[in-house]
Figure 1: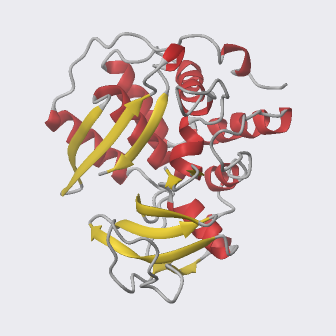
Figure 2: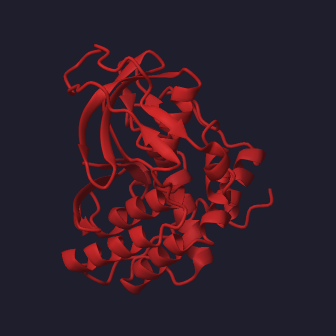
Amino acid sequence: MGSPYACLVGLSVLVVATGYVSDSELSQFMTNLWNEDANRASSAYVRYDLQGHSHTGNTGVDNAPDRFFSYVNEAQLFHKPTYSTFISLLNNYHYMTGTSEYQTTTEDTEVTSFLSQISQTNVIRLAQQFLHSKGYIPGSMSDFLTTLRKIWFHFYPRSSHTTHEDTSGFEHVFVGETTSSKVDGFHNWIQYYLEEKHGRLNYLGFVYTKQPNIVGTHFQWHNKIKSLSSFIVGTSPEFDLAMYTVCFFVRQDGDCRFSMAGHSMDIKSYTVPFGSYRDLIATAYIN
């Protein structure tokens, strides 16, 4: 299928960590990662309108008559290789949990293209070098891309009560999905912008804001409510993937607290809690 990683998806590519990462080390690394995010969008390219305040208990009251995103310069941002290959992945999934996922040859190639593009950025190189230096992953970039493909893109059941492989870490975190009663995951500003642009997402108000450009929003998507979705506005796809991946390894199944560019951050990430899928990403988000 043209993928150098597809044949390795079923293999266990994670290794036992040998190095402890202190809070100060993690803060220094994350600040370096932030500073090296050359594809991050500035306020000249992305602007948003908070409008009314909401809260997590709100069941659907609309406190925001206008869209969240007031302006995105697609011409300057979405032609960049890591953005364009990321966007090509967003329509590869069924949004309803319980519906089995299947990756076509074309979709498999799209994953490979995305991984290839992000591997050429300083952000992903830094993440690979840091995790390797601490003993969490093997030594080559090729090995790291295999690991990323496995933990983010391998399908598994969202519920232990079904055998349907209906989700992946990437789908949950970056695309979003729905249960019978609510929206789950959905922690990426690009997906948020595109779904809002196409009329599938209705912004209902903000729950909180904090630096750097972090917003917790309340919205409706596919007739379901998301009580709180958090994301950093303007970060590149490779930055979000790198930040969540590092936290997944060094602070797995708990709080990943650090200072980034002078701002306190708390990321939560969890492994899949059942079966043979325990080394995959169940979720990752800004707390």
